[in-house]
Amino acid sequence: MLRSLTQALILHEKITTTETRAKELRSVAEKLITWTKQDTVHARRQARRLLNDETLVKRLFDTVGPKFRNVNGGYTRIVKIGLRRGDAALMARIELTSE
View (cartoon, one colour):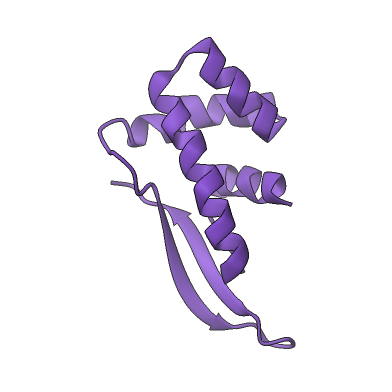
């Protein structure tokens, strides 16, 4: 589940999910973006192992990673958007900051 959420976050740069899942996703996504700062074969292999998709690894290291080259953390933002209709689960939008 976290793998597919991470893939969607890298692909779309923001997704809407439950607040609990967004908090778990934050740690995985920030770890991946930290690996892009090294840009070594080892870092790419670690990202490939986690994402399981070579095109997403290329996108991560070529477009997403350079945005955060000079930032020391806090690559994602979680915005609470209210309750889901039906089961009243707390919903949140997680997005990559562009700073």
